[in-house]
Image 1 (tube, one colour):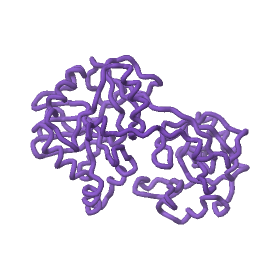
Image 2 (tube, one colour; image 1 turned 45 degrees about the vertical axis):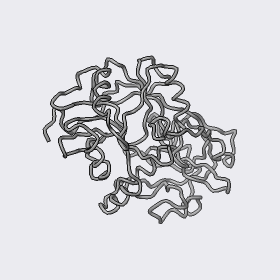
Image 3 (cartoon, one colour; image 1 turned 90 degrees about the vertical axis):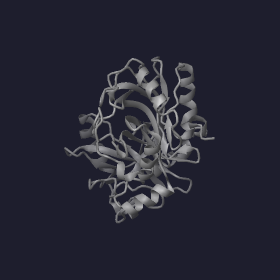
Image 4 (cartoon, rainbow, N blue to C red; image 1 turned 180 degrees about the vertical axis):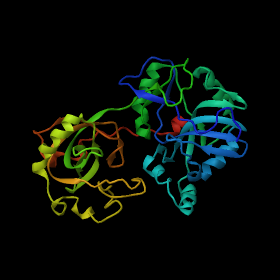
Length: 354
């Protein structure tokens, strides 16, 4: 491979802002695997956020990129999985599997797509020093004949339209709005773009905690919500605390500690995968990398309010943020019914699939 920009390259990043800034260019924020595609003839490398290649996991996408990209180019984008005209990140995660036979099977069963949103090189020219407005024009020309499953991300220049997208597109599984300064150069691993994501709150049961990896203090608290049948589901964690708070939480939570056998999640103690459709808080999986995810079970009597962006299936997509203790709420009132459901939106209207 001989390109003006060679792998590995860390992608340019975005910093979170509460409101969409007036910078002149707006795109949907895709929920998938970030990738930088390096193509030199028939040779293709799919880079990742951690600079490790993902090429072997997406053979069907490699074939599509060979037929839809220029002969020599480096393109920044997102690997996504589209089902029923919405993005499905949980299904996409299944594609990262050590067994080649399963990778091949999933490539046929749940094929991935790629949405391109920047270009770092074309032919023998390094474009990273050129302003984004010029790179966007080059990208549109370079992929003008691309066909599904390869797309150019839609974009608008009107701030009011971007605000409409922010509300509408969540129903199609999108992650928010990305704002890009038109005069910005490509800066790997620098947060020079802006992302605006949804923030909501929910009252959750504190059902356990994990020790911090570096000290005998609380690292994260495990959150639960009840379904209509009264079963407590593990829905995520809250983990952003100052060290002093982590230390004080040890004493605060100690009176609530119980044996795992007396805990609602006790039946999960000897299992290695999800039970009854819910992810276990202490289980090992191919995503854990051998890390210790064991937890200290707590009597499910405590309630806290947390902030979250959105749900992925029946779980919070990302780590939540602590807001306050809710001593006025009873644990059994912490149900899925309190969560806001975004209105469905057809992803095909954005990618022009229909």
